[in-house]
Length: 130
Ligand code: C2G
Image (cartoon, rainbow, N blue to C red; front, top):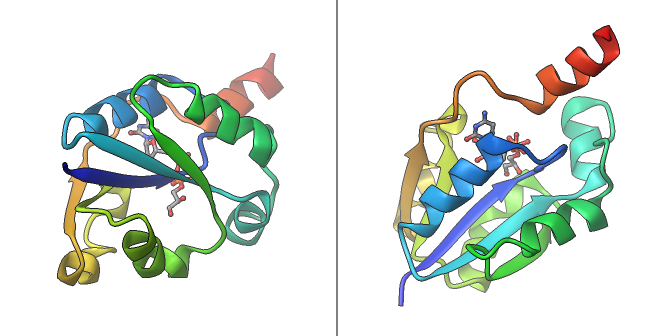
């Protein structure tokens, strides 16, 4: 069995998120998703997500292609998460290309292309502009 691990905030869940998770699921038989915590987002972006952690996790967990979710507390803990969840493949969007290559000693690392022209930031902006 090939175990896939991927990460994300998945705020204002949209088609780019679905596409990424469906393509990640094609790379294995079991998909675990680390959903970044509200606190991690605040430290990274200086703002909290629109949807709180529990809701973002529940949305991702409800997808047929996702088998397990957990809270990603820190960007620095990927090695621990890979071991803990016995991941064979780490999947990330290509906005992170090259950033996680050092984990290749633990598992395969695959960067998948992002879906063009959709982002949580743009959705927030377009609602603000209305
Ligand atoms: N994504 C995508 N296409 C988009 C937007 C997002 O393929 N148009 C992908 C991202 O590349 C990522 C996943 O959907 O793989 C989740 O996206 P975000 O919620 O934006 O993830 P991010 O905030 O970058 O969190 O440890 C890393 C972080 O948790 C990643």
